Image (cartoon, rainbow, N blue to C red; front, side, top):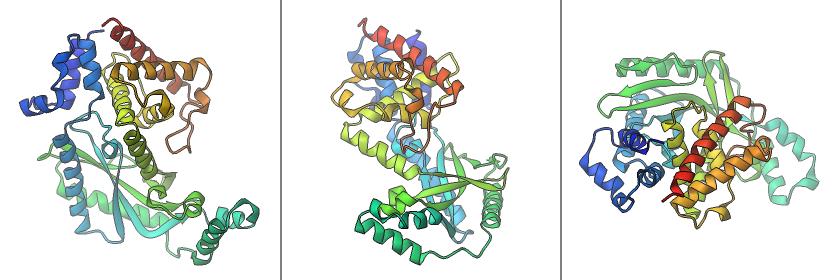
Amino acid sequence: MDYSQKLRKINNRYNPDSSMLVEQRMFSGESLYDKDVARYVMRAMKAVDEEYTKRSKAAGEVVKQHLKELLTNVSYEYQGSVMTDTHIRGASDIDLLVLCDKFVGTDIFKVREELAKTWKYNSYQLGRLCQFDNSFSQYEGNSFRDMAFLRTQIEKIMSRTYTICDISKPKAVKITNQNLHRDVDIVTSSWFQSLDYVLDGMPENKRGIKIYNKSTGFSEGPDYPFLSISRINQRSSDTNGRLKRMIRFLKNVRTDSEKDIPLTSFEINAICYSIPVQDYAQKEYKELVYILWYSMFHLWNDGKQDELKSVVGDEYIFKDKPEKLAALKVLEDEVYKINKDLGNI
């Protein structure tokens, strides 16, 4: 592998303006390693410079303020890898959710079914189910029309505000803030309250969302981005940042590979999150590379790929997805080569 070329690629992503200050902040200490493979691994595990991340978030806040001036009955949240600090580009997109507050999707029918199974739950859970059922009221408006209208309003506001504005995507409006040099994806969405959310006492991180698709006119999901963010942040904190280092490393290896590796952040998060904490909680950078290779190899070689679920646990990652399994094998092979080269130091 040409690690000097890989280092140039990663440097262009992490420090596109060739700032000496960023170079010093991010890459100090690498002179201790006399081989490019070691420097590449160290760099690939590091977080994007804090100033670049701040700009991404600032671009999202500017969009939010423009929308707040004209929209009503909405709330705003962020999702995506910027919120877990596992993004790998200084110019990473940030996802701004614009949530319609006129209605809330629920699992009311499941709640009512479970109320008949009193033997399954403790008194606190039964109380929560009863309270939810008693306070439920059917929305009398038209949620499909509400979502379509909200998407249209977002398109109009963003098109008037930003020179670079793409409204063609079915699930998001993408704008470019030319002052901050950042893209923002604005996602039309709504809230969803699952059975588990009710049973657990409605914690904020278990709130679900549904995302509007303007091509179909329907909302898709539910998804649980806040639970995923919370779990990744907590586990990485518990392992002194090691989980996030592994996620960034795999993303960089995927991006720098000469081969096409169509794995998303969602899928890479699941791979890394599935590794038992005790396997890597005390490991250093070279050992983390080995752990990643070993885990991916045995995932497919031992026929366990169909068991792997998302960080939240509501979606299978590789089951009935041969193209994703093939991508896993390519990524595993890339990590194997890096691990082998590290062993020569």
